[in-house]
Length: 261
Length: 367
Image (tube, rainbow over all chains, first blue to last red; front, side, top):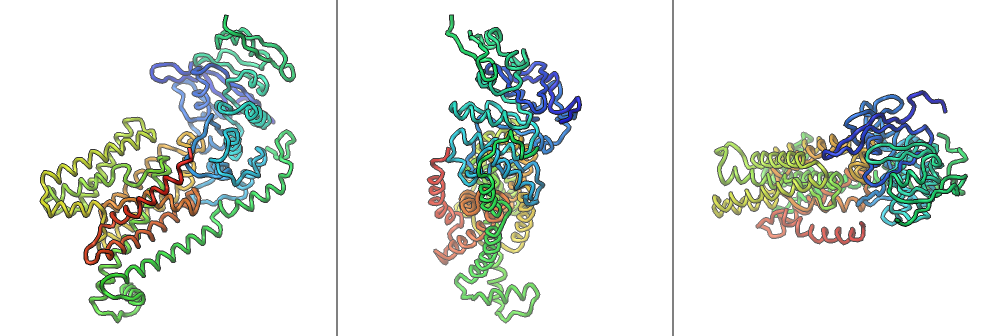
């Protein structure tokens, strides 16, 4: 994969205000193409807002977001949706949809009005179902799926968009531990640039190539899990005591929390 | 991106499973034989319904009489019918039946679009205050005599409907434009204009006027002529084209506005275009035939049960189902208490309420 200097998604000095409060304060982030980047930070630290700005769903008040060097704001919504897919923490619908219907939604940015879906659409959908292990569930109703299965379907929908960047906002929030592990393993294996907002430090250490830590609207640390996830940082960001040992897979950090003094 | 990448998750029996999925899925997505069958079958059923509905009534008329009258008026051969029978067919029953079809189709399509756009299964074409505004406009013209007889009830209703919709747009824009705010603005406008209508009727109308206004409010297709048919058909055609052009976009709203935006939809533009289009069509229909309720609420749900929720197939089928439904309901309305006529809105409500309960019952367990 050859890359230009401006390749991929890049946020520079991004700021955003809401109700007189600074939600994001000069945030820089450049996810390395192909990497899985974990976005950590307490509630209200600006993770979701940053993801919405990276997806082009929200315009920053200051700073710019660029995609291969082009400002996101100058690209059309459809163009952006063909490059960047978004998975939210909890997708809700009242519409009676099958798994297949949901995955097909991912082809919307690729199709023009009036046109029938073509071969490329069918192939992208079939491929997305296969990669998420949902081929046999295609006909099942969305409303009969468990939370973990629903998130898996949303990832299949995102893959059908054939993006190069995947943004996930706490995708494992409502899932049991088995489904959390499955979902993150799936995302980490994808050959896409992924940015995942997460709460669980151990899961972030286990599955992410890079970690970016936010606090009060600023990025305060960035690097590999071993560089970033330390006892000092956890104390500083979350105000919690913890013991960090290199006991995770491949010597990645493992976090054990301690009761308050 | 190569699907042969060993790092990717592979399911063991992907080959057979793939074939199964595409075989099950192909026709459903891209129209396919079922859609063609529904579409042509529905169209034939609609034409037949219109032809048969025109024959029903106090004057005995046969289906061949209807064909002969229609053919002669369209310039194919001379009619052997008496002028009276020809007049009954061409000037009374035909425009009325056709307008019933147009109203049914239009209200059902508007209801479908509203339900999808506002993500509310209980939305209908009148949810943004169009019918309440129309009734206020109508009573202002009929009861207060604004316009001095130069302005018709329909024109007054149309202006009232547009004013009410404009108020809803302004309110929802001011209040923050989320889906909930749009619906709440509609509720507010509906209450306001209903109150205005009641106030005018209570303070100024005599018994005869009150009865007339009430009859119109409940929806009635009596006494409509070709001008209404032509006008409403033209508006329906334009709106159908706009809505069908947005079919995929409407699918994208299934998981909400943010999800739609993330799929490349310009949410603000789509919403304003579709709300204005459906409001215009609803205003035209209400001005001609009054506020015929329940068609726009119940028919979309019935059509969804037939076609699934993809709008490319749903919208045409909803239009046909609405048209056929209202042709028969109006036939019932004008014959069941013959010679007295029941407002068609009363009949749709009588049929619609049980259907509505069934819809609620069916959706009771979905979150």
